[in-house]
Length: 404
Image (cartoon, rainbow, N blue to C red; front, side, top):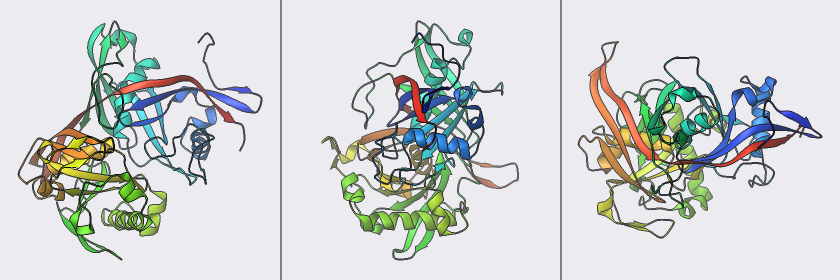
């Protein structure tokens, strides 16, 4: 593009703002350089939220996002704001917003693990990283401060001739086309809000009206997540999106489990508050390995996986798996006694391969049992890692009506 991009510019009834539309893992979202946003939206507040919601096309009572950049699913209704980090330990600051589709709010309470894989490449694209730091060839470790949860992430971005490599042969289940592999490391991903096990237990009993008593693991690693046994709620763990998302009674049950679990985790004070905190916690159900056919028709044999996991995001069953939930799965699987660990066969492990609606994913998590600064002993996740891919889909400007 020949035009110099300096700031948003008023053109008639709309403003235009520099933006990059990116896929990261099995999600995609609109990425912004903080300095490119209108001055009044460069800080947290209603003006920023209103602008970003209008860009995505929310709230949309039709749940289609026809008049915006969103894709009307939890995986595609996302925004990211990047800026150069003032902390010498990090290259870039990363803020993530999960935009509600039909309601007027953005949930800033957690991270998106899938889009995390795109942050390093996008930061390079936006010029947020000094060019003299980027190698001519090889893997470049981009250190990222995840501002929502105050955590460190490292992405290993492939570089060739000083440029980010996007194309490659790496296939990620849930993404139709191959791309270059990007390893994502989540450093000490637990305790974004409190301890890794908020109740102090690796397994608890949760009372849910209309459901009864269910055993659950409440874990805060990657993202706050509630894990329950599939059989306990009448499922096999092999379900696909249409089996859950077309069943209003099932969706209401999962939302009830999520709301009461959120209270148990100390994330909200009452179940009514869950309506304004849709992004976290996640709720997932697990089962021992079984053979099943994915949404793309691929046969997954039971001996290909260690455990089956299905997870809901923003009130719907996810088409694959949220990256942060994958961190939670790997973390829980590595610790004896959790619902996930039991479904995976028990014992200690440093990685797990789980089956999701679109295929399989391997996630590594190094768990250690140690004594903390306060003298209390417990489990700690030093690092969780997985492979994703990312690609710029479009770059330029988004146009936003000045009002309405």
